[in-house]
Image 1 (cartoon, helix red, strand yellow):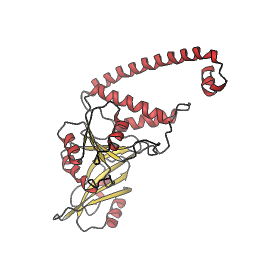
Image 2 (spheres, rainbow, N blue to C red):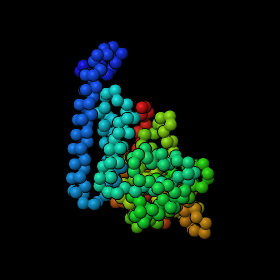
Image 3 (spheres, rainbow, N blue to C red):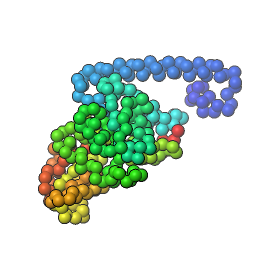
Image 4 (cartoon, rainbow, N blue to C red):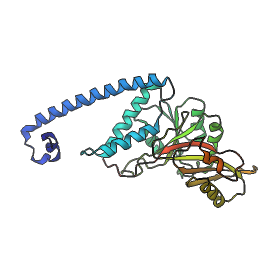
Length: 299
């Protein structure tokens, strides 16, 4: 262990007269960190030029980077701090490549979903807050927002104004190839005291990208009176592992619509989709998101 690491590890035995030298080491390290961040920003510019406007939102890659860094990390820096630092780095990288605008659906207007959005997308990222999910979805559909934050389908929100019924609104837009679920918040599932505790989905006009450990959302149209048990069996028989299912039965329509969460990153050309029996229309991929980190990222 280096003398600097020993001093950091057991600060109680460090002589006071060493403080100036230790602070000088910290200053040198801060300068190096700044230089490395500037170098990273220049590479981000090159990446943006290479992508030629193909989209800067890559939640899957961000999740993979965080998992890699946490797996590598062995020092005294809290793991939660690593997540927070790199989330701000990701936000600044996106801002280099495009003007990121975020629409946040916060039904109770109490700031909980806004806090979750800032935790994930950056403290200084421009955000507008809406009470209605339809408003937030419309902002993305019309191109006024790059992403939107929406309450998890079926989650209680405090005022009863949002429930399972909002998610079918995604299907019409998704059929046009314009809106995709790309992330789920929060990315770490254990919540430190005071952290945003709501569950949310992130939608974007850029398709989801794989992180290596993902869940996918598939929309199914089925006969109105079909049982969830038979549907679960049909999904399993096709080779999927369904984790949750939400059903929407609109009045006066001879069909029901299901939102099914399955294990893995599923693409539209997955042959298993064609094996799901009993459907009234081809399955639709609504999106995917990285599996959350389950550990407690204490700060």
